[in-house]
Length: 251
Image 1 (cartoon, one colour):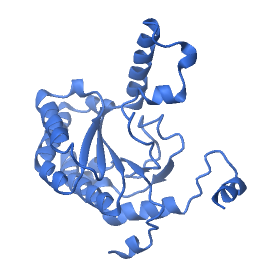
Image 2 (image 1 turned 180 degrees about the horizontal axis):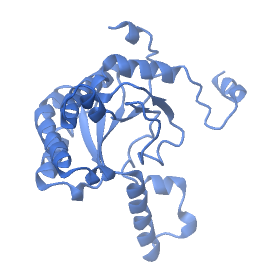
Image 3 (image 1 turned 30 degrees about the vertical axis):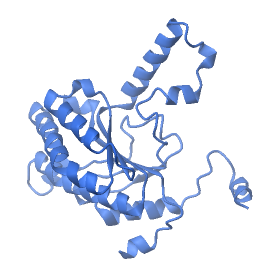
């Protein structure tokens, strides 16, 4: 157990952690390497963070692996990223099964190559029995795409007379998102020094704590995750209430 771990209140862990894994390319360039080298080393951070979250007893971990905007990157980099995802899933599935980790994917799966899609679906099937940490990979994902798709589904239901406009609530919308069965993130972490949410889980992070760090993703490991959790636990989550109301509710 690290010194950082000892500082964590195990009774106040975030149930769901979402991460924007940023800075792979800049990490590589700072070392005179190719951008793709940063993505390769970043896989080690994915493994370390999954292991740390599992050990701590976190329920859900959602990782922004590939956005819909990433399709606009140079073809060589896009192909490399998708091939890397296929390779990682193939290599990590058995480890996830041993650690009782369950894998899910959120995003526009229809845009993936047949190989990437098959690899992803195989890993999800192989780990479906896991009852510990659930890892959600956001691949070919953007929040505006997700919300647009949800609105199309609701519009179709309304056109078919199955729902009325007044039947649509926040809960109804949430139930038609790709994260329908997942609690909203308690904390959103972004690595790499940028301070924006980049079209990620916009509906779901309405009341999430935001944590930005200058650490590039390839350097983000267990200690960095623990520091983010410690920072999260130092905050008062009010959800629109006053501090006095929160204190009264705890009595």
